[in-house]
Image (cartoon, rainbow, N blue to C red; front, side, top):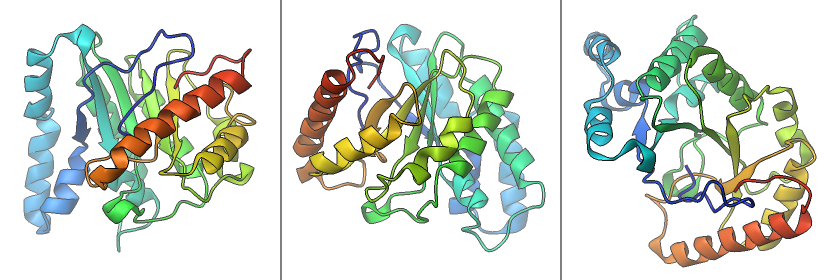
Length: 248
């Protein structure tokens, strides 16, 4: 996710949980295993059990203090035709995978999904046309995960302060227990952050804010500025929307 979820307007969801981001199986297979037969063997092993890292994290950190985030990147890129080929049943495969991953997280642990377009050098591998694919994948998650999905993070590119980008989210039916975080905060762009917030609130009735992607590959010199950008975005949300419940 975008590195930080700022405290909510109602203060009921302060961002103080450890938030491990774990890759989906297809991330491991597609990025690290290129030989097709070996990839199928790896897929079978991964499908048989959730990542051991999840087991270790859940066994170590008390459930009340933990949130697990599945980082969904390669699967988004498959939908976007980034790779040379994709199986005819790619949607079913992706939705089944996302359902299994959600079901592997104990119900007592907060669960979320970060839908990602990659961020090498702080640039997407594919620039999304709009949020239609993100909305489709999110709907697939909600249909396949039996337990509560506590949060969903969706990226918003810096130059997309237009309603056409977020318009597909109007058709996304959110479970009442799911909070949406829009990754619309960008480095040193307070005016742009406000425009993106203003546009999003015409489509999405309740949302939180974050940066577009994680900070692991970003410039460490930007961290202080990003923290300040979150503070300013929260102040703008709470001051400009006094009657609307906005978690951020």
